[in-house]
Length: 94
Image (tube, rainbow, N blue to C red; front, side):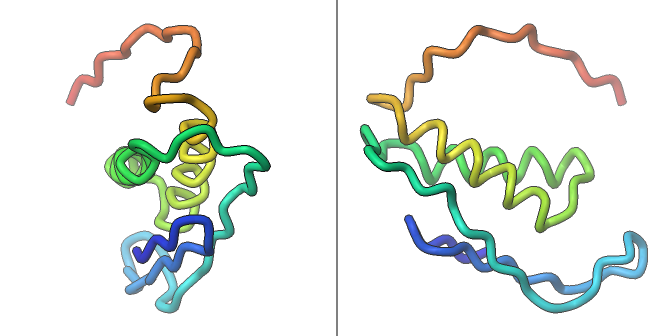
């Protein structure tokens, strides 16, 4: 994964027979935000969303798309504090 700020993100796909991932690469274009408020924690939010998606079994490309969507939300708030309603935390039993 190579992030490029407001530019496209490059996702390298190694390929895995267990989940039918083809080798290659894809590029994810971020959502353009007309008036970003602050960039604090945008990269960290992207990383956290990507790792969470991958740990939940989401593919690399889909994980990068959802991560870019979260980054586009975070950049609209000062100090990366989003005024979103709190959702209850779900416990995952393994």
